[in-house]
Each structure stands twice: as structure tokens, then as C-alpha cells.
Length: 449
Ligand SMILES: Cc1ncc(COP(=O)(O)O)c(C=O)c1O
Figure: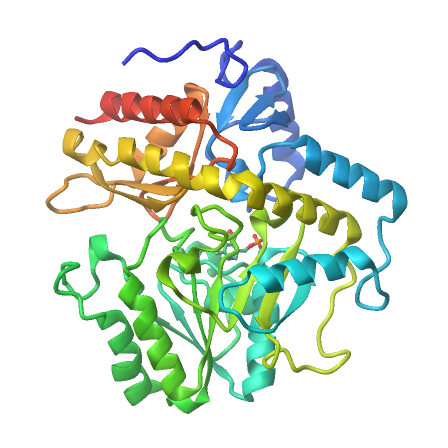
């Protein structure tokens, strides 16, 4: 298919071979001084961004379907967010909300409490990142329930600090060399309907994933009355952009209520409008007890939030805090972000996401290396396999596709062992979605029919 006019400012425009000369120099210097633990899939050296476009150090313009790992929800440098940051930075940059009061922190907590699924009184704790939002949830759950054990899912990613890392069950490289983990975490299979861990089809599914928590896990390994919380991503992110069936959440809620266990929804990646609703939980009519947010909440400024039922957040002064958490500049960015999300971007994510998913959904019929295409809103995963029958994973082909998309001016990321993750800023237009769909199809077509 003929691609649309490449010189338009809202579509990619590549001027040099990649990486260009300036990018090369940065990458060389980076290699000498930066932590070798970072994972870079391709040599993008970002210099500036606007909307869904990122310009590199050599002036090449890319269409960004990564949004800095699902962070730049309102697009790069949205004028309203930039203004909010600048205005706040000129008035008050830091005071520490743990020891003093400031109004915008209260305003954001009020807004988040109001928007969180379920019509319940809530309280909000602010940190600086996703992993801190999860650490707060872990500590809060132990503190409130006076129980010590946790359930999490295989494939989950909840962060990399020692508590969150114990919950993470995505790739063993994230844990290798770091044991012992925080004790008390038990992993169980996640409802991945493309690869049902119980060999079921969606019609036959009796939510075996939840049954298995009760039996054998609770019956044989960990008494339910010692479990403080179950941590769940409503759409599994790092694990491969996997969307569970609605009945999974109904059953999980039933199980948790039966044993007085809290459910923590980790919406660090799926929250803030990404799935076409403010929170992915809403797609499933699911009301978590604790909700963890970060990434898209402040359009790129570091902020995490842990929102809990007011009766659960019953810890005493001094029990938990962070010097920078809820920094006024990050809060100002979040308030501007929320306004844009509510005004138009959640709806745009839903509309453009449906269109994009509709187009990409045709790929498995045309290309045997595309095993599955799934997602909600602008959180879309494409699973690459060696063969549709065997579903053998093809991580090498996935990596090749991600790299070739970069060479075509489209920034994507991997997720899980063999999926491509599409998580563009929520401002993308239908035309940009079409460009991405055409590029991905072209690249997949060039790799494997
Ligand atoms: C679902 C989920 N939880 C937690 C985290 C950790 O967030 P952070 O990297 O901000 O610590 C991530 C990051 O990718 C995530 O996707």
C-alpha cells in the first residue's frame, strides 16, 4: 500500500542513515558511562518531541508509538502541560508534601479519588514512580491486614525495587543475581487466552486461573487467611499486552472477598486513559481495593500514586513517606494531564485505538508469523510466532520487526518474549494510526509471509 505523504510534519521524515553522525557520538559516549543494565532495542537519540513526533539528534523525525514506555500520554511537550510546569516551577518547586501542605497536591488527590473505580471514599499516597506506588501498596496491605503473604501472576511486571521485584514474574534476567527476594510472594498463571495455561478455549473457560489460587495454592501451600493481597495488572503490560476475560475479575473478586484478601490493581501502565477508559479496570466492571498509578499520570514528570479505600489506608504518621513524592511541579503536570485526558484524550484513545486494532486485527489472516493481535484502546500487542499452529514464540523475528519499524521512522517496543507493544501518545490521529498500521504490515510482509 502506498504510504501517505512523508514530508508532513505529523509523520516521519528521515534525513540521514540511522543512526546519524550526532546520534552515533552520543551513543559512543553513553556506552562509556551509563549503566549497562539499560535495554535499548535500537539507536534512537531523542533530542526533542512534539505531539506524537520525536526528533533525533540529527533532525530525523519519528512517529512515536512507544511514548517513552507508555508515559507521554498527552504527547510530547503538550503546550498546556509545559505551561503548567513552567508556571509552577516559577512559584514553588519543592516543599515536601510529607512535612508541609500545598494546595495542588490536595486537588490532585481529590480528582484521583473521585475518578477511581467504585463510588467509595479514597485516600491517596504520592511517590515518584511505578515501583514506589507498588511498594506503598505492599506495605499498606501488610499494615492494614496484619497478614504477610501475597499472590502475583506469572508474566507480571510490578517494578524493580526489592518489594516490587519479588512480585515481578516477567523475565528472570530481572531477578538473576538479586536473590533473596522479599519473602511471601506466590506466583500463579495469568489468564492468557491465546495460550491458556489450562488448555481451554475462551468458550470452555471456567476461570481455572482463579480456581487454581484456591486449590491447589491456598489448600496446599499458603493458607488464605495469611494472604494480605493479590496483585494484578488489569491488562498485563511488560508480559506481552495480554487482555484477560471479564469473568476473571468477577471470580477474582469473589475469591478475595471470601477470604478477606485485598486486590491491588497495578494500572501503572494501563491507567490514565491508555485503554480508552480512564482505568482499564473499568472495562471489566472491576473495583480494586488499591490502585497503583504512575507512567501516564503526569505526561513524563515523575509521579506515582497509590489510591486506596479510605478504611484501608489506616497507617499512622511516619509509617510511610517520600521526600520528593508529590512534588508540586509533577502535580501541576498531572493536573494539566488529567484535564486533557478528561476533555478529549481518553475518548481519542478509544476511537483511534478501535480503528487501529481493527486494521491490525487482519494481520493473522495474512501473515503466518502473526499469532495474535489484542488490546484495548491504545494498548495493543502483536504476538509474533514461528508458526500459527504450534504458536512457537519468535523473539528474533519480533526484534527484527521492531528494528525495521525504527528504520522506517516508527518507534515501537517489545513486550513479553515475542510481542510488539504499541502504546502511542493518546493524541495520535487516525492518519498516524494508519501510517503505523501500514508500516507494521509492510515490515511484517518483508519478513515472513
Ligand atoms: C504495570 C507496571 N507496574 C510497575 C512498573 C514500574 O514502574 P517504574 O518503572 O516507574 O518503577 C511498570 C513499568 O513498566 C509497569 O508497567
